[in-house]
Length: 90
View 1: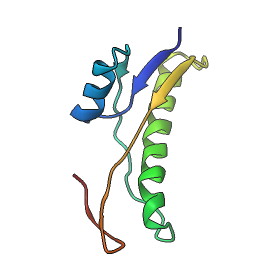
View 2 (view 1 turned 30 degrees about the vertical axis):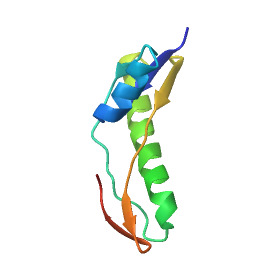
View 3 (view 1 turned 180 degrees about the horizontal axis):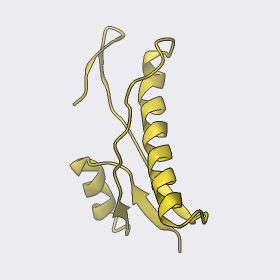
């Protein structure tokens, strides 16, 4: 069975997986949350989540001495938008 990795410190995301009784591990790596200025507002959390997943994937690969570990990585990000402007993170 594939291991599921939650690449998030979010208590809600952790709680959702626990409620669903899905076994998982949490691995969080420091991630640059900047984004290209040309991105549309709705693309920004996708870009940041992808960066989080890549950081965790690289960490797992380095920890496995370059072996391609068969893991599912769940990464997400949330931004608060008002009138098409980002006003922060929850």
